[in-house]
Length: 162
Length: 90
Image 1: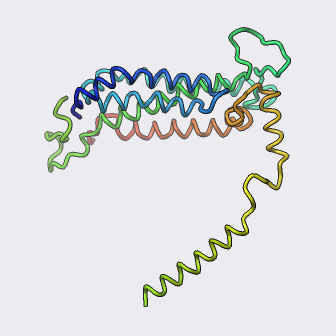
Image 2 (image 1 turned 90 degrees about the horizontal axis):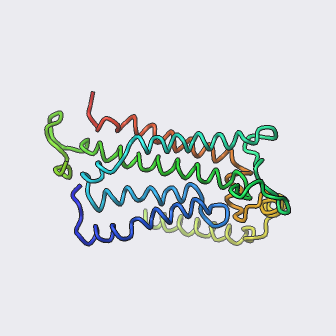
Image 3 (image 1 turned 30 degrees about the horizontal axis):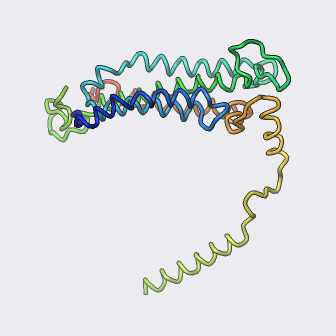
């Protein structure tokens, strides 16, 4: 995939980073405002697709980190499961960290709604890793669409920049 | 012949659909409100979550969200198994 024109890359340089900021905002404020882990993670993961569209496949393959995305995915899923296990004396996924109105907070850093916002962060990390890995894997194997008769040798029509 | 049959079927089905819409229960007036009231009251007072939807998804119904996360993980595993080695065949 060849990079698009200088207009697109300039817009990317200026505005694409706000997508990450906005996605992290949606993830972190999921307990107060509309949104949450899934939606914010999808917003953040759009960044890698934007890199692929704006700067082309060469830059995308140098920027993408498969191990980091896999680690995000696994850590997010395991953290989500662990937060669910936190409520086990009562029930699975019982919100044992929530502080009801009128109670005193345990610390400055613990959110009032307990595991809800922590689960939002965990699910957000998982969705970011998973969707970015999907884009990475599917672009990495785009040569499957070649129409050549042989096994290999011919490359896809949009892969001559690699 | 075909067109008349088609038109008659459209008219009959449309009439049935309009009749169903006439007889549908009005929006916003549920038959049972006990569960809704419980969630609306307890989401803020017990769980301190201002977003009731998120408190439902991640707290009251968290096991279902674990299933959604597992669906995402399974989809990623399948895509990795298919596409990971760059699409090369055996």
